[in-house]
Amino acid sequence: MSGTKETIETPLADNADKPTGEKKAFDEFDFGAAEKKAVVDTSLSSKIPREVGVLAIIVSFCVLAALTASLPSTKPYTESEAGLAEINAGDTAWILSASALVLIMTPGLAFFYGGMVGKKNVISTIFQSFATMGLVSVLWVLIGFSLAFGDDANGSGILGDPKTFGMFKDVGADPDPNLAGTIPLVIFAMFQLMFALITPVLVAGAVAERVNFSSWLLFVFCWHLVVYCPLVHITWHPDGILRDWGYLDFAGGLVVEMASGYAALSCAHFLGPRKAHSSAANIPLIMIGCGLLWFGWLGFNAGSALASGGLACQTFATTNTCASASMMTWIFMDYLRGKMSSAIGACNGVIVGLVTITPACGFVTVGGSMCIGIITCIICYVVGAFFNETTGIDDSLDVFTIHGLGGTCGVILTAVFSSLNVNPGGADGLVYGEGITLGKHLAVVVISIPCIMITTWGCCTVANFVIPFRVTEEQEQLGLDLSMHGETVADDNKNDKSV
Image 1 (spheres, helix red, strand yellow):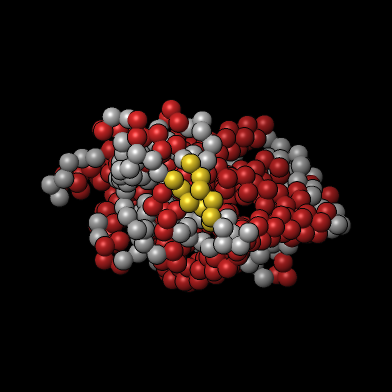
Image 2: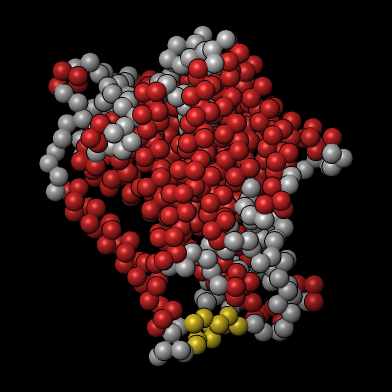
């Protein structure tokens, strides 16, 4: 059995019967001959890594489930504290709606990314997002929510106690006054899950068209527990070290945007550049994805108020205004460079605006949000114009320049434009005569970037040790749709054939 090869017929063989103009299975790759075959190595050595990786994930799930199931039940708060919490129907209805809005962002991002890659990688790119949703949802229930929002472990301010909410113990209809006093704890947990879902999916854009699907899932498993959950705890938990210190992050500038952006940079550097670059497969799909992201982001930011009052309305307004200002700035920058205004560019401008307002949305005025959108868009546009070529790092879909750099600008500008008149729970920023918050935010940026990149590199190393993180050159050339999943959008009439 060792060293044997198995030849598998693919739908590409049928291109021989087509007119000359239809012989190309993909826009970027001309197979040319009348019949093509994909060669898959079926030797024992090629099968072991994938089996070991899958086994490792299954065993890890089982161990986590067994550990959490055996833990004694713990109450997240005392009976006296429980009496202070009362469910508000309006707040609960809004957070339920906001959770659904945020959920739609991940399929929206899948469409956004799927339209940007080449035709032979559309399915794999979208499927990575959907598979990540399932994996992170299970992890969040098993232990992720407890690591993020459980009782502070050993007073460290860095990580939650896995015994607090493991397997969603005591996560039910009663509110927790320490986290969200007017809504059931279970809907708070589910709302926060939606943030956990989209963050690793953002990272996937940097490794598109060359990442091994099985290894990617293993990476997400590690990254969620090692990087994402601790960042949530230090930023949003009442005892988190950054929250105690006075760091302001309303909806995830550090937790979601900077974390995904700098993790993407680390992953792209780890994998190396693609062998060939592809043109966007479907621009209308990009625009649909952008629309869904814009729509869902309103719930992403406004829902972070955790109530249906005036702060949520203010956040709604700042989010939409910043996105609009950023889009128009991108279009104007294209005009200044003598370029035609493009749909892809406009969509990038929208996303930059949504990214950069995320940490600031609940602390700044509407006018301040417009300034943030314009400033950040100019910075991201200029850096993005030369980043990949200058550094040699192939960030496939510009995740770093949009989310990493955009999130960094948002974190810094939050401390410039924040106002106590908008949110008494925040602080005045630099334009209101207060510079301490800006110093704190700059310190957070300087410290967090290397921490995120180093821990992400470690997760890549672990995943790559178990299953190669990058596909082979032959698989990359064939396209991940066929080589990873046996499916293709190149010829819709042949999708019913098995590979």
